[in-house]
Image 1 (cartoon, rainbow, N blue to C red):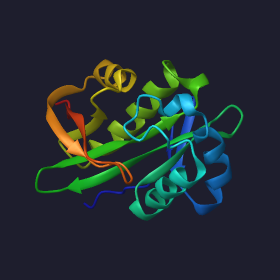
Image 2: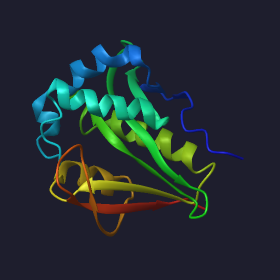
Image 3: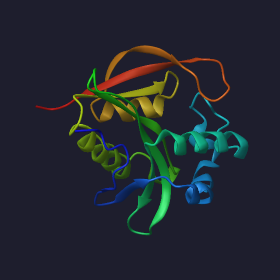
Length: 173
């Protein structure tokens, strides 16, 4: 069975649906908050020209979603599946950002759980790469069961490589 990288996933609070070009304006409105990116290796992603490259990459990835608040039907962020490797039985979840008013609560937990539940239909391992200095995201990943599995260098946009913590969550049996 091949991995469906862009299913429609619905929870109690949010819905994840495939990203479309028409989502640009609503998603950039969320992404234009500099505080969302202050701990991210690409800390200027709130700028239109930087975000435009991110958005283009998200569309081309074939695994990007918008996150929708089910109560008001507003786009509140984005995330994606990436790097499906059937031989290693793993997929990455990442490229996540969410409007600040949704930080630290049930929304992020539900979003990750929806994606993990879907991923574990196809793979044994889900990986996350989090910037070494992105303490907020590292804590959030550890909170949902991410286990540190080393450090890797990643390139964000046109920046030099930066260190990221690699986290793994194994499929529960």
